[in-house]
Image (cartoon, rainbow, N blue to C red; front, side):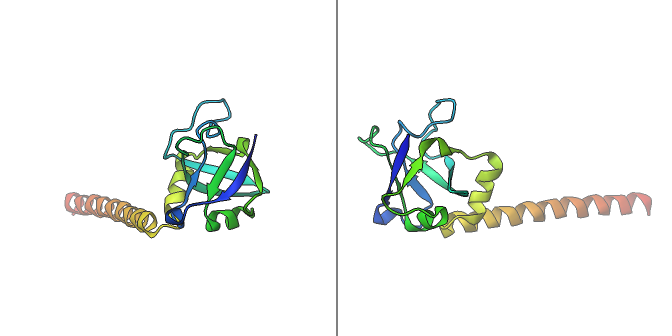
Amino acid sequence: MKLRVEEADWDEIFSDMIRIPGDYRRHPNGEKIENGRVVRIEHGGKHVFAVGRGLRGRDSDPVIYMDEVTRRKLGVRRGSQIESANIREASRREQLRWYREASNPAARVAAQVATLSLWLGALSVALGLLGIGIAIYA
Protein backbone atom coordinates (compact mmCIF):
# COMPACT_ATOMS: atom_id res chain seq x y z
CA MET A 1 0.00 0.00 0.00
CA LYS A 2 1.32 3.41 -0.91
CA LEU A 3 1.18 6.27 1.58
CA ARG A 4 0.84 9.87 0.41
CA VAL A 5 3.47 12.18 1.96
CA GLU A 6 2.06 15.24 3.72
CA GLU A 7 3.60 18.07 5.74
CA ALA A 8 3.80 17.63 9.52
CA ASP A 9 2.14 20.06 11.90
CA TRP A 10 4.17 23.12 12.90
CA ASP A 11 4.76 21.89 16.47
CA GLU A 12 6.24 18.60 15.21
CA ILE A 13 9.03 20.15 13.14
CA PHE A 14 12.56 19.09 14.18
CA SER A 15 11.11 16.39 16.42
CA ASP A 16 12.12 13.41 14.22
CA MET A 17 8.53 12.22 14.41
CA ILE A 18 6.24 10.93 11.69
CA ARG A 19 2.51 10.35 11.79
CA ILE A 20 1.19 7.15 10.22
CA PRO A 21 -2.30 5.73 10.71
CA GLY A 22 -2.30 2.58 12.85
CA ASP A 23 -3.60 0.45 9.97
CA TYR A 24 -0.36 1.12 8.02
CA ARG A 25 2.13 1.07 10.92
CA ARG A 26 2.82 -2.67 10.76
CA HIS A 27 5.70 -5.15 10.71
CA PRO A 28 6.17 -7.18 7.50
CA ASN A 29 4.42 -10.10 9.30
CA GLY A 30 1.34 -7.90 9.84
CA GLU A 31 1.87 -7.26 13.55
CA LYS A 32 1.22 -3.65 14.58
CA ILE A 33 4.22 -1.43 15.40
CA GLU A 34 3.53 0.18 18.77
CA ASN A 35 2.96 3.91 18.96
CA GLY A 36 6.15 5.80 19.89
CA ARG A 37 8.63 3.25 18.53
CA VAL A 38 11.59 4.27 16.39
CA VAL A 39 10.97 3.18 12.80
CA ARG A 40 13.18 2.94 9.73
CA ILE A 41 11.73 4.32 6.51
CA GLU A 42 13.36 3.42 3.19
CA HIS A 43 12.68 5.11 -0.12
CA GLY A 44 14.71 5.43 -3.30
CA GLY A 45 17.89 3.96 -1.81
CA LYS A 46 17.80 6.35 1.17
CA HIS A 47 16.60 5.79 4.71
CA VAL A 48 15.72 7.77 7.83
CA PHE A 49 14.86 6.95 11.42
CA ALA A 50 11.93 8.60 13.17
CA VAL A 51 9.48 8.04 15.98
CA GLY A 52 6.25 6.60 14.57
CA ARG A 53 3.03 8.03 15.97
CA GLY A 54 -0.59 7.49 15.04
CA LEU A 55 -3.29 9.77 13.66
CA ARG A 56 -6.27 10.00 15.98
CA GLY A 57 -9.49 9.22 14.17
CA ARG A 58 -7.82 8.67 10.80
CA ASP A 59 -6.62 5.06 10.95
CA SER A 60 -7.76 4.23 7.42
CA ASP A 61 -6.26 7.20 5.50
CA PRO A 62 -3.18 6.10 3.48
CA VAL A 63 -1.05 9.09 4.48
CA ILE A 64 2.26 9.77 6.24
CA TYR A 65 3.03 13.14 7.84
CA MET A 66 6.68 14.17 8.09
CA ASP A 67 8.59 17.41 8.51
CA GLU A 68 10.79 19.01 5.86
CA VAL A 69 14.03 17.69 7.37
CA THR A 70 12.80 14.09 7.15
CA ARG A 71 11.39 14.58 3.65
CA ARG A 72 14.68 16.08 2.47
CA LYS A 73 16.70 13.16 3.91
CA LEU A 74 14.44 10.72 2.05
CA GLY A 75 14.37 12.78 -1.13
CA VAL A 76 10.57 13.05 -1.24
CA ARG A 77 8.21 15.97 -1.62
CA ARG A 78 4.76 16.68 -0.34
CA GLY A 79 2.36 14.62 -2.43
CA SER A 80 4.93 11.90 -3.20
CA GLN A 81 4.16 8.31 -2.28
CA ILE A 82 6.04 5.88 -0.04
CA GLU A 83 5.42 2.15 0.09
CA SER A 84 4.15 1.15 3.56
CA ALA A 85 6.14 -2.11 3.28
CA ASN A 86 9.32 0.02 3.46
CA ILE A 87 8.49 1.10 7.02
CA ARG A 88 9.64 -1.21 9.80
CA GLU A 89 10.58 -1.00 13.46
CA ALA A 90 14.23 -0.07 13.96
CA SER A 91 16.61 -2.57 15.55
CA ARG A 92 18.26 -1.76 18.91
CA ARG A 93 21.42 -0.68 17.11
CA GLU A 94 19.43 1.57 14.77
CA GLN A 95 17.59 3.08 17.74
CA LEU A 96 20.91 4.04 19.32
CA ARG A 97 21.96 5.55 16.01
CA TRP A 98 18.73 7.56 15.93
CA TYR A 99 19.46 8.95 19.41
CA ARG A 100 22.97 10.02 18.35
CA GLU A 101 21.79 11.68 15.11
CA ALA A 102 18.43 13.11 16.21
CA SER A 103 17.42 16.55 14.94
CA ASN A 104 15.95 17.32 18.34
CA PRO A 105 18.81 18.55 20.57
CA ALA A 106 17.11 17.25 23.73
CA ALA A 107 17.35 13.64 22.52
CA ARG A 108 20.75 14.04 20.86
CA VAL A 109 22.50 15.72 23.82
CA ALA A 110 21.03 13.21 26.29
CA ALA A 111 22.39 10.36 24.17
CA GLN A 112 25.81 12.00 23.95
CA VAL A 113 25.96 12.49 27.73
CA ALA A 114 24.90 8.87 28.28
CA THR A 115 27.59 7.63 25.87
CA LEU A 116 30.24 9.75 27.59
CA SER A 117 29.11 8.43 30.99
CA LEU A 118 29.35 4.85 29.76
CA TRP A 119 32.91 5.35 28.51
CA LEU A 120 33.97 7.14 31.71
CA GLY A 121 32.47 4.30 33.76
CA ALA A 122 34.39 1.72 31.72
CA LEU A 123 37.59 3.76 32.14
CA SER A 124 37.00 3.92 35.92
CA VAL A 125 36.58 0.15 36.13
CA ALA A 126 39.76 -0.40 34.08
CA LEU A 127 41.78 2.01 36.25
CA GLY A 128 40.38 0.41 39.42
CA LEU A 129 41.41 -3.05 38.23
CA LEU A 130 44.84 -1.71 37.28
CA GLY A 131 45.22 -0.21 40.77
CA ILE A 132 44.24 -3.49 42.40
CA GLY A 133 46.72 -5.35 40.19
CA ILE A 134 49.52 -2.96 41.09
CA ALA A 135 48.70 -3.21 44.83
CA ILE A 136 48.68 -7.01 44.77
CA TYR A 137 51.90 -7.49 42.78
CA ALA A 138 53.91 -4.58 44.19
